[in-house]
Every structure is written in C-alpha cells, then in structure tokens.
Length: 142
Image (cartoon, helix red, strand yellow):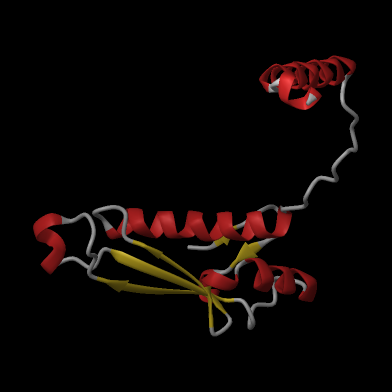
C-alpha cells in the first residue's frame, strides 16, 4: 500500500515498515488474541524521494517522531488492525505535509484605530479621576 503524500511525493510500500503488537486500548476480550496496535516506520535518511533541504526541514520539525533517522507513528485507537493501519498512514501523511508546507505568514504592521485611541485616553482620564478622589486634600495642604 503506497502512501501518496501529494501530487509530487509518493512513498513506496517498500519504504514503509510495519510492526504489529497487542493493543492496550480498545479491543476488550480480543486483547489477548489480536495484534491491533500498529507501528509505522519510514526511514527518512535512506529515502530518496525528498531533497536534502526537505529532509533537513523534516528532521527539524519532526524531531520528536524520529528514532535513529526513521519517522515513527504508533496507532492503537481502533479495535481492528485494518483501521489502525489506515490511521497510521493518514497521520504519517499529515505530519509530512504539515512539516513541508508550514510557511509562516509575514506580519503586517498596523496602527491603532482612532476609536481605540480615544477609548484609551478616556480610560486613562477616568482612572486619574478615581485616584484624585481618593486623595485627602486636607493632608496635602498642611
């Protein structure tokens, strides 16, 4: 089962390593019989579908998912191995897409509106009046 990341990137099923084990999550009595937990590994270092700059970006952004240069996704959400396999492929695809396409927008500098400036001045004046009313004027004149 090949993983199509986008129109330009396709990970061959040969590059994906699957490992199955018993799940501690959903499964009930099947827990003792069925290996529904799925670990999907993709060796990023040995892969030739990414450019060196893409590999570098993936290494930086997916550092917590990397083990010995391999991207690893673990899924045990569903009761069946088949559904967990689908979820693992989707999560790996999503991780790669988000890491490669996340370009931060440049912030446009803005200035405060006239209304917000007026409101700020009014609040400052109100606060000043409150503090002036608290003062004991008799003590200040002595």
